[in-house]
Image (cartoon, rainbow, N blue to C red):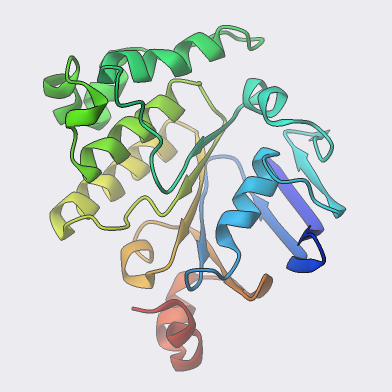
Amino acid sequence: MLLSVEEIDFFVKKTQILRKVSLEVEQGEIVGLLGRNGAGKSSIIKCIMGIYGARSGSVVFDGRNVTKLPPRPRVLMGLAYSPEDSRVFPDLTVRENVQLGMWVAEDSPGGSSFDPDMGFEIFPKLEQLWNRSGANLSGGEKKMVSFTRALALSPKLLLLDESFEGLAPLVVRHFSEAMRRIRDMGISIILAESNLGHTAQVVDRAYIVERGEILFRGDPKQIAEDENLSKIVGR
């Protein structure tokens, strides 16, 4: 088991955001976190990354309990995160944004194994954008750069938050294919999304999150066939 999250609770002051959340990710697997905006998907990802601290429960990654570790040690162990808003640095070029990930990975035990050609293979358009500043990218292009910067960390598990949000259907297909290629490289993915239609064809297993709890775990096809479940996540 690459990742095991066991019954984590997360609070903001006195408000409970996550309730006894448990999930698992196997090596080379794409797992979907599905649910409405505000359901708790991003909070789960941030607890896995160490951005948020769980009040109780545990996070075990690659055989090590990382529940109390801050984000940087988790990154150096092989966790990488692409946030919903991309967080591309506007004053840096695409090349420089991606190199940030490579520089951080140099401190990991295995160093950085990322080659820009790998990024170009996954996202061919990236080569055309290589020397463009982050300020001059479209929303989809920023997501592409954020995605690639996370890959530059040479991760074992990639956490993607709303990677399809706001993208045209053709771009969604390109991103779906990119995720399959990454999985074929042996890198696992957690994909947090609010639209079932964008994720059903790419994820191997799915969890439905509602009001900070896991309501369903299993085959995403079961969600599409169940009217009540599909209403929760949207089609």
